[in-house]
Image (tube, rainbow, N blue to C red; front, side):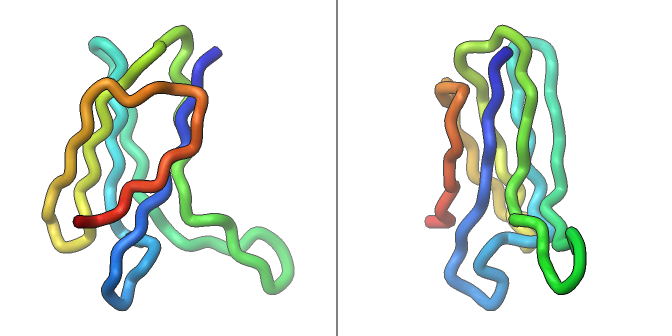
Length: 88
């Protein structure tokens, strides 16, 4: 089973892109994940990243809508890896 993990990075006061939306498309199927902060136990924070389960996909298209609405898109991203999208 294929997967992709996506995290965001930008230079402003929100370096992890919290509030951004990540869409991953494999064929006709699109999955959406909004980046949020959340607690995961006493005084700890979950990592700010999105994990997508992709069945048998070998490559996907990734679209990031940053918190201010700007969009970055990437085609034919290989699966089974963690990627960091850095805002240009």
